[in-house]
Image 1 (cartoon, protein in one colour):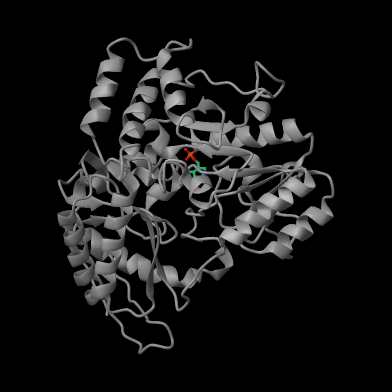
Image 2: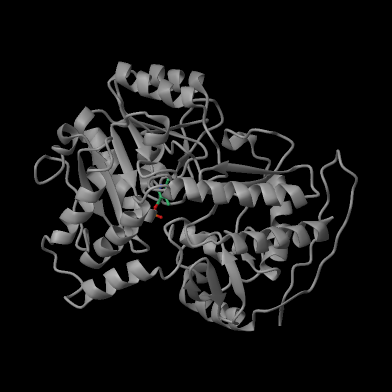
Length: 453
Ligand SMILES: *Cc1c(COP(=O)(O)O)cnc(C)c1O
């Protein structure tokens, strides 16, 4: 059995129409195929998180058996340089020796107590002593939980109800945040999932990114009832939609003026673009920050943090209830401590950004497609097929252009490079990627892109 990817790629109208057939792709994936057949009987769509199902690139998802450093191996023994990195958490790469030894050592003394442990103090101190934007923190078990709790905290603190979010930002799958924009600029939203009641949708206003006018209108239509504005300050879940610094500053000023809280959802950007995330990069003080992904060293950890005053509202100190059986889990804390300690070493982030620039410049140099663009922020990158030089909102992305990614995706797999299986996803460079890995990746892009033309 072969991974077959029969599709033709039709260039943008402005370019000459070239058709390329490439099937079958000669890579053995029969074990993944068998495992996926089984998984489909066990899980909805065969997966435990939707994007893993390869729906947007087509074909069979690869079942991963092993990872070491920047490399992963699938169930058929195919090896890839990995730029998905578990969707961001693995900034040190797979099976990092320091993380593994911390986890091993901690596990020997038990895996969970439901009582406080010193490891929670240690991870919290490591973070708080190196992050001037938050004074207290609460650990939870996922990014979704962190954001959901932050929203409740914002409502509890402000005693207001509405939340303003942006189209093209992802904040996890809690009800209040599965809301997309309606037809007008600031009309009532629609839920982006079945099962979210209208009454909940009505409390969320979803507006375009990088659009000051829309924010002003949303505040005007919900006078004195906006609890918070939540944004991914570096939106990286729907392409990489880099915002103008002035837009983020505008949100800060407006929230101050209106008595609303500004939440930076730094589940991706936190500990990724710098230890203090986007808040540090742009030097903007949010009222609440949410974290996830990197914070747990590859284990399920999320967190939210704020000033002492705001955090005093959280139970048992305050009236905003939030709890978790496995919150602050010692094994996960140990992994987080080991990983974040590495991130604090001098030049850690500069080195990652430099490697990422090297990779992208290398790809640009071999890229024959004038409308393939590469966007970068630190060690985050995004491949887009567009004529535009800047993409700052979800509306700027041409859904039809995703067919190019689909074509490229399978050629890259065949040439030993694993990216997130959707053109809306970003890629991550980590400490484990060597220049040899990057050169190999550039070569793989060269072969793959050339074969598309
Ligand atoms: C991944 C992500 C989430 C959700 O985190 P989970 O751990 O998947 O629940 C929330 N916000 C942002 C910005 C994310 O990137």
